[in-house]
Each structure stands twice: as structure tokens, then as C-alpha cells.
Length: 360
Image (cartoon, rainbow, N blue to C red; front, side, top):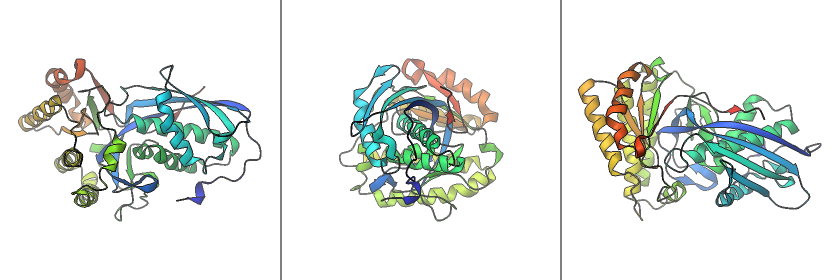
């Protein structure tokens, strides 16, 4: 698949060297993307909250070279990370037709996260979107006529080719990825801002991430996505996601928090049900994940507060709640749920507005 609109015209002149930097947030899907086709095309549409505090900062230094092929080094928190190179090499190979200057430079990629790497918070989403945005900064220096809209759209397109959910981490605060007949402008190629009315109750939502397990996931998301190809319940799952996307439209407009909770929690549990019923099967939830869910359900039933959970592809629990209920929910998290987190650690986050350039 070649998308011609993202192939630039020949550059009149390349820069000799330079440095750019961007900060990009993670995101948490409300309707989950699980399963993909070739060219990083999602098997179903998804919608996510863009986060504010969980983010990746990436600096990209570049210098012109004469040798052929890709040349780069990757550092995470100042330490050389050769094990990151295969994924970035694959990313560069996928996007070279759209970013033809890639093979003209040696790159030094310096990145850091505000959250634990590979622990169920979408570090690949924030990391790949930050890198894509840095590449777009270079392209904008080579072609200053690029508009802000095109900049973000192409960054989303490129980020998707590194990590599917990364296309949802360019802008905020409610992003749709994947073509859906009922959502105008939705696309399999890029994430777009949710185009319809959103009730004020959803404008300042909170997300506290309970770090049940900070270690490496036993099964990568890439492997999990691929297991959907022959999954016995794949088609039913894709139909469910399509239906839930449609059902969210009136919910987001009306501010119906009970209906929102029902959809979001069903989506989280279905995601993990797909993992548990694939071949081979696997479980990413931990005993403390279930302890948290059961305590949260009991707390909600007792108080009537509109707190709910969602899960990413990991053991950690995202506790979602409206801003006006924050005091009671945060006290509950500190006194009842933190004990189920690794070393009592959790991250308080909220909806964010998307990625931002960093002065360098």
C-alpha cells in the first residue's frame, strides 16, 4: 500500500546536521483495537483518551552521511539500547518511501518515559509518535510550506506504521482510529479527533494508573494481535467493537456515565478474554488486577460514584472517573487500592491535549 499524498516532492537541499525534539503522550483506548491486517491496518475501529502525564520525550540528532542504508543509535534514559534497534529498523523500512531523507543521515535517538517501560502503559504509542513527530520536524525544515494540519496527519500516518495505537497519540483529547461508517472522517490510516459533540462530563476525565506489575509483559502486543488471525471468536469481537463504537456516540453526547461505564468495562474484559481464548492462550492479568476490580465494583455499588476501570494489554488497571468525583475516588485509591500495586506505586493522570515540541 502506497499512499501518494504523504510522499514529498524532491528536496531542493538537505540540512548538514541538526537536532529536533518532541514530547508525545500515551493514550488509553475505551473501545479496544486488537487484531490487525497488513500495513498496520486495524481489524476494527477504536477510540481513546489522550493522557497528559504519561508521555515520552524524544530528541533526534542528525548528521549527513555518505554511506548507504539506515544508521542510528538509540538511548533510553541515557543508556544505549541495541535491543530497540530491530523495531526502529523495521519502522524506518516501512516509512522510507514517505521520509526519503532517512538514509541520508546518521541519527542519535535519545528518549525517556515518565512511566515504567513495557508495563501495560502504551510506551510504544508515545515512543513511536514522538519519533514520528521529530521526523516531521525535520521535514518541515526541508519544506516550510507544510501546514499544521498536514504535519499532524502525516505524523499520525507515520506513527501508525511503527505502532498501531501510536497514531492516537498525536492530538487530544478523544481520538478515533479505524474506519467506521457512523463516524465522519474516520480512517484506517490515521487517528482523527472525535468529530461529534462531547458532554462536559467527559471534558476533564481523570485516569489513575495502578502499577500492579512494572515488569516486561510475558507476551508482546504484536504477538497478541497476530493471534487474532485464526482466533475462533475474532469476527464476533470485531462486530462487538463496531457496535460499541456506534453506541458511544449518543453516550458521549448525553453524558450518560452509567452507559459509558458499561461499554468501557466490557471492552476491557473482552480484550483479555481474547487473550485467554487464543491459541496459544495467555493471561496478562495478575491476582492483584482482579483484587482491584472487585474492590472497585464494591466501592461503586456502595457509593454510587461513577468510577470504572479499563485495562490495556497488561496487568495494570486504569481507574477512570469524572473530575467532580476526584476527591472521594482518589482517597479510595490511596487507602484501598494502592496496597495491590507494586511497591504501592500508581500514577495520577488526566486527559491531555496531545504532543508538544520541545526546545533543544
